[in-house]
Image 1 (cartoon, rainbow, N blue to C red):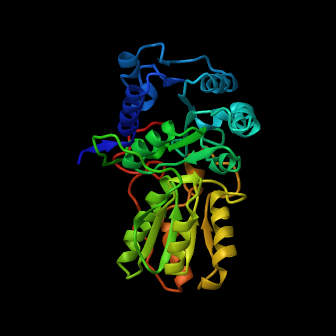
Image 2: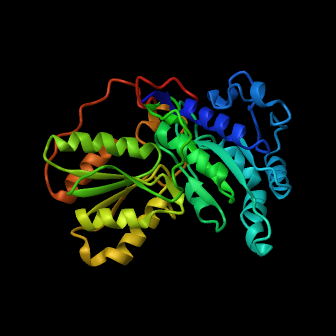
Image 3: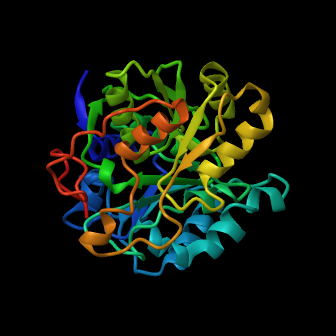
Amino acid sequence: MRQLTYTAAINEAMHIAMQENNKLICYGLGTDDPKNIFGTTQQLQEKFGAHRVFDIPTSENAMTGVAVGLALGGYPSVMSHQRLDFFLLAMDQLVNSAAKWHYMFGGQSNISIVIRLIMGRGWGQGPTHSQNLQSWFAHIPGLKVVTPTSAYDAKGLLLSSIRDNNPVVFLEHRWLHNSVSEVPTGNYEIELGKAKVVRSGKDISLVGMSYMTIEAMCAANYLAQFNIDCEVVDLRSIRPMDFETIFNSVRKTKRIIALDTSQPMCSVASEIISRVSCHLFSELKSAPQMIANPDNPEPTSFGLTKYYHPTAEDIVQRVAQMLNVKIPAMPLSTRPHDVPGDWFKGPF
């Protein structure tokens, strides 16, 4: 099977979807610029024309309203705002129009929109360019929220999101864009709302999403050297959330750490801990734990961000505490803390 980057997988999904449905429109900030939103919209305008693939003036609420109107007229769209932080200006159209239309009008209309947002940490992003607000979106009835981790999932989940009749917020962590995984050449879907057990284990469940799944896998591989067998669950979708897979994992391991890229208050991780505590309290061997960012805005400086984001080492030490064992600290990385790996070349 081919190896593709996360961005190339998104681009391939867009080509498939636009070839399949000649009413599908792709627009947003940077869609047809030379970098093509980090390569994800490459060659779309050349192949499908400027009437279907185009840039739009920087007015986030207006461009989201355009997507609602297009959907009502029978034209689904994939809209890109690039930075999640800037999309906050469009919350009125998202929450009060896109999410509620189907319900308010008795199911007579569907609002078929996919909103691509880039989130997460990076070189000096600071408090207004690095936010992970997935729990905001997941709180709204009528929205679906998707957070693929691998290139394989990015392609399959994007195709499913485009074909879904509901508005979907499609969240891409910037540290995943140049990661690589096996991706089939064909047309395939991954069902929304289905988590994936990416590593089986019996001692503790690590439930993550997006980039935190990568940190969980790194921690699990290190802990395996000390005969600690972690099960890693990748949520893939935040709303709907696959609690059945989470519960089955916890029933097996009797312990859970929920991992989040956001602040802990009212987070996705806190929702997982709440549900597990409510439904599986008597089966737990230790109190559920959460690892998330500190409860304050992200700093900008290189020195301060070094201690802000949780890493695989934090997961290792928390697992050791829960199992009451001593584990040597993970070897220190030689790369800068604001670069995830040698494969990373941006986007910024």
